[in-house]
Structures are given as C-alpha cells and as structure tokens.
Image (cartoon, rainbow, N blue to C red; front, top):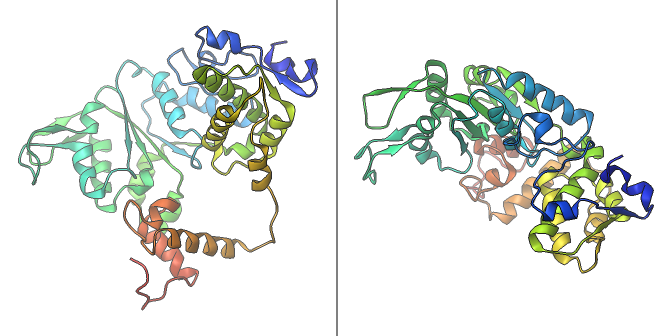
Length: 358
C-alpha cells in the first residue's frame, strides 16, 4: 500500500505525509495509486489533476475520448472547478500538443477591445493603433485556442466568432486580406448558456457550434473523496515552496476540510491550504479550523428567491449601485449586465422608474 493511502491506519489521529522529502528533492507530481496524475491521463506535459473519485474519472475518460479529435469542446462548471486544467489536458493529449495553447478570458477584456484582441488589427485601424497587432486566433494557428468565460462574449461579436470557427478564416481590423487558420477551439463557462439563449443574450447557432462535445465538471462538494488527496497535494506544494518543516497533517484538519461545502471549489481549498501553511508553526498542520467551522454553521431557512435577492442587494451595496462595467455588480456575480437587470426586475429590486442603479 502506498504511503499516502496508509496514513490513517498508521497513526489514527494524524495523517502522515511520507512524500515531503521526495517533493523537496524535485518531484512535482503526486505519484500514488490513489491520486490520478499526469502519466495516467496522458503524458508528463499534462497539468497535474489530483483525485480518485468516480466523478473525476468520468471527466478524464471524456478527455481521453475527445482529445485525439478536432471537435470543439464546451466545458461547463462552477468557478474554481479546474476548467482551464481540463482544456489544457485536452490540448496536451491531442495531435496539436506541440502547437501553441492560447488562452483568452472573455470576461477580463473590455468589450471594445475584445474584437481587436481576437482578430488583431492593422496600423491605423482605429485611434491608438500605432502598429500592427496579431490576434489570438492567429497566434493559436496549428494549436488550440481556449476561450474562457465564453458566456461573457458580447452579443455583437458572437457572429464573427461563429464565422471563424466554421470557415477557419477571418480579416484583421482595418484589412481586407483574408487570413486562413487551423485552430481547435475549446470554450468554458460557469453560466447556463441555454438560459441565456432564452433571454436573448447568447446566439443559439454559436451555442450549437461550440457544444459539439460538452463536458460537465463536478463541483468539489460532489467529490468529497478527492479532498484528502487535494489537501495532501497543496500542503506538499506550499510547504516545499515556503520551506516549512511540516511532516504531518492533523486528521481533525482533514475531516474539517472534507465536510466543508467549498462554494469556491478547488480554488477556495487551495487558497485555504496556502493560508494554513503560512500560519503553521508546528510540524503537524492543524490549520485555522475556526474559519471552516464558522462557514458551515447553519442559519435560519430561507427561500431560494430570498437568498438570491439578499445576495444581489449585498453586491449592489458593495459596488455603490453600479451594475455594469468591470467593477460592477454583474461582473462580481459572474452575470451579464442584462441578465442581472432581468433578475433584479423579477425579484422586485428594480422597477421601470428606478434610477438608483447604473
């Protein structure tokens, strides 16, 4: 039995980490039979995906099936579930693995600049275009383009994205010359695109073109068996990076992590482990368990509509009534501006004559 798998039986109260010395010696992957690693997925270039749950294995099985093809993939999942890691794994297991893997976060680039960022522009194409710029589609030629948060793609840009995916050609802004490309497109979103289609915020034809092969990533709360291995992985990584002499992990700490709901998924768990390692002053990691205890306390039952209204109002107070823009409530909630306004009207937060929100 591997060291990692035998922690709980060797010392009931403490999970012993037998691979810290190996990690310090330069190994960068979790290589136990209980944690999926790069070699099981594809090759050493694939990102480290840790876990052994049936839910994760189903996802990785789909990755193996679709990777050798050129099919467009749509990855759905909550924030922090590892959508970019899955996209990178598909690329690395494909025939395009030696080509570029180009990433674009559609939510992070202002709508007015996104078209230029995607397709590039010629000098003088618009005010401030002092030199030719190569777009992301062109940079990804021969490889894979990963469009993260595709649900935030502006409606007016969607037909152009559809055209380049279907016809594999486009023109830079300010140029009439057609550029032909060979690019595989992988998209990801945490939003419900079908609902957005019904609300007129996403084109149905683009959705059907993107979702040739959909992959649904499970939230961490549906993968409780993987939390133990993820904790081990992140503790190993941060203890080595910070040169902390941590040699064991408290069973109480593992149990608290396993029973927490982790609304921020793996990203939230990773940040919590990093903070715990920073604060640790003992060879046995106990962590700030009070943070998790407070988070899982039950409250008075409320309806889903009440909870949604309360959360939107809290966010609006934090943004001082600003709905749109990169610092607005819509961006913080992971919604399109029009979707949030629609929800506000439905929940009675916003009326036709209301001027409080911008």
